[in-house]
Amino acid sequence: MYLNPKVVAIGAGYHGCHGVIALHEKLGIVTKVNLHDEQTWDDAGLGKGDLVHLETPVNPTGEALCIREFADKAHKRGAWLSVDATLGPPGLQDPFMWGADVVMHSGTKYIGGHSDMLCGVLAVTRKEWCVGLWEERMYLGSVMGSLEGWLGVRSVRTLELRVRRQSESAGRLVGWLDGLLQSQDREGDAGAVKEVVDSVKHASLQKDDMDWLAEQMPNGFGPVFSVWMKTPAMARALPSKLKFFAHATSLGGVESLIEWRRMSDDGVDERLLRVSVGVEGWEDLREDLLSALKSVREVEK
Ligand SMILES: *Cc1c(COP(=O)(O)O)cnc(C)c1O
Image (cartoon, rainbow, N blue to C red; front, side):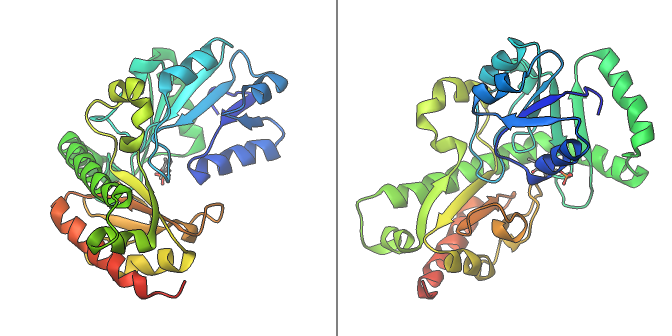
């Protein structure tokens, strides 16, 4: 609303952001183009005052994109770069360092951190944008209740502790799972996991991108990762076999969650599970995952 772009470039990511752009398209005031196809940007005339919207790490896979690269592509045309940094909150990444003009967070996730409040955050560095956003918010009505405000202040005190621990545990779980998938071993845990898991995705596995990624996320690659099971039936069955992971949507709380993603986003592959790692001991989460993966071997293909 505040920047009022005529063209918005956006890629994969949170379905709610696509939903909001669809409303603006319905009103005929915005054209949406593909983040990964610059020809579509130029065909639609993406230029001064328009918007490039980047989500990184991206929901639901947990893979990262290079903020600096997209900042350069936007700025060279006079457009702004907004970054949805929900999956890489403060403590893990600072998009302003790499050229973002607007940083967006679902405060509902890591900033709240306890799955008990709804909140959205837009951060900007220009004073006049702050004033403009604040004034427009008054008429848009997206004002937080005072209890949520208080819960948010409580939560921010532990934000860095939580996200670094959650991110570290996610990295360990991803390394363990991927290690089993890559191993030559056909027996034991590796054999069992390979029977049911097709692949694991997470920024920590983007080895070819580490030249920019290690700088962009120096303190960990985020607490969300995704698992592609061999079949949709296995993906549907796994969440109810777990004891430490609740089967629920959302992410970012101190408790680990897993979601059969198709349940809340009908655009995604039916074999996809999204995992949000909490603050529990990672070894307990690993044992829980292992026994659940072993038990879905019995599920009909
Ligand atoms: C959840 C989420 C949002 C939306 O946040 P709400 O607080 O639920 O409105 C936006 N972007 C990403 C990446 C999210 O995960």
